[in-house]
Image 1 (cartoon, rainbow, N blue to C red):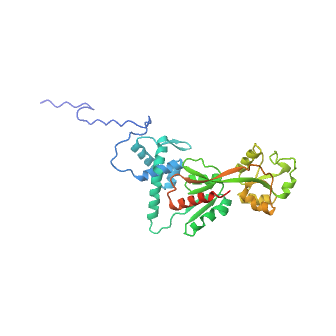
Image 2 (spheres, rainbow, N blue to C red):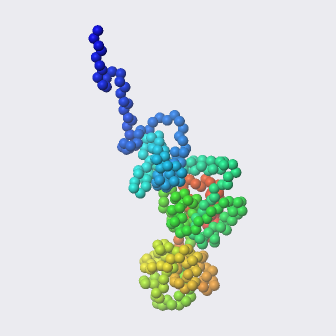
Image 3 (cartoon, helix red, strand yellow):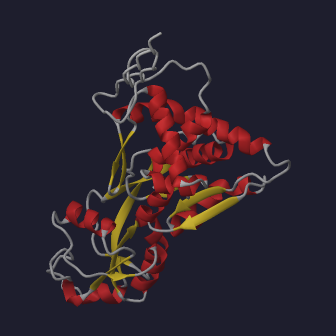
Length: 336
């Protein structure tokens, strides 16, 4: 009986490899097509997605979540496979969200943040609630914010306050280090919501001695500054000074400022005859009434800047934050 002929490779009953599914993310070959799912989506994946979306970085998200960066990458990959679309484009400076990520963030952030709040509230029996982390310029904290939130502190509410320049505070808010910020500059970062809190008049002031040294026929807007006087500011970038100069003199302020920590330090330096300064009018009112300060100009329409109340998108569901937010907005209507 003749022996059976050997089968050539790849024939007969040898199983053939299944073809891989085609990518379905608008031409992106790295993302597999969406597949039917029978299990509910793990909300932890959405929380990881939101951290990457808000921080703009897989690395920063991993540090915030206390998990490894490969774990973050794996979870984002699972979401991309689930939805069949690319969510982030990795770049040297971070991760850029796609339009699909923008849409998912809008839909997911409210429910995910609300779920996080419930978990924190009912976990760790009797554990104290997370403090409300608020940031604002130092003069606004003492003069305006603490009086508004005083009764919340008697509840008691754990309030942690950070005093810094507005740009620094907004960066900390975007990183998740703060919950709510009162800022004198308009927030422009993605994932930050801001409402106008109040409009603030600005005033150019000096001590009486410095004011007398300025020639009567010379405007303070002339460059160099009259009488060799210096500008005193709390930022090298001169945001308040430039706004005043452009509004009144229609040009930028050509000056090398003396920089001090905050507006109250600016006020003290001007009263000590260090130089000129542009300050919120409310902050100068007492010094003008005492004769320690002199307004150098009285424009028919005083320059006005807008102060904003900023939070991260989707976080307003936290009760303490929502209460502070609504109270500040209510009282801000009466501030000038």
